[in-house]
Amino acid sequence: MKIISGCAANIELETPPDFTVRPTLGRTRKALFDHLGNFTGRRVLDLFAGSGALGLEAASRGAAYVASFESDGRHAQFIERNIGKVCRTGCRAEIELFRRDALLAAQVLPPQKFDLVFADPPYDKSAEFCRKLLDDPKFMQLIRGAKVVWEIPDDPGAVGEFLDLGLPEEGGFRKFGVTTFYLGVWKK
Image 1 (cartoon, rainbow, N blue to C red):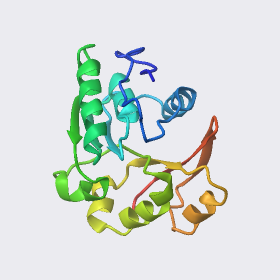
Image 2: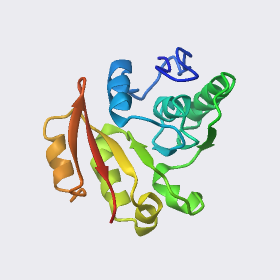
Image 3: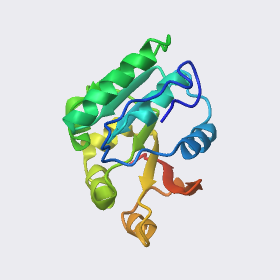
Image 4: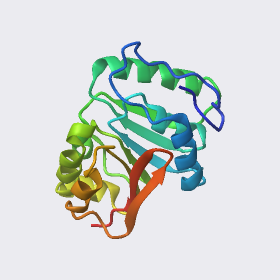
């Protein structure tokens, strides 16, 4: 898996040989990031970072700050090494890795404004985690006005589960490659 574009383009990201998460495919990431446009100066929150690819791609494309949350210690070790690789290319982003549960982001991070939030939790808990974050007033304050990009499980009926959550109307579902995402601005 490689960084697609920006100052760290073509940098190979390390992952454990028995990687237990499903990183967003390269073609899908390219289509998604091209759709999201210019990253210059953006502040990005990467929840359930897994491989770190989404946050690091944003950093490579000019994001000013990336906060990544990954609770699995083994995956966090690989993300830490990948951060080093990206930074050695001259990437100017401030990148922080929080080895914590993404659901605790609002308790861990100081008050600040994010422009973009990536969320790619384990598919079997994706709707449950989305509901918990929507119900957390501190989290909603942390990301108010940010564009949220939530990867939707590829299970039949998954979109319906998310429709039942009461996602903000300023958004919708969009397919990039074989992957469906919810893209919306959470203003609640």
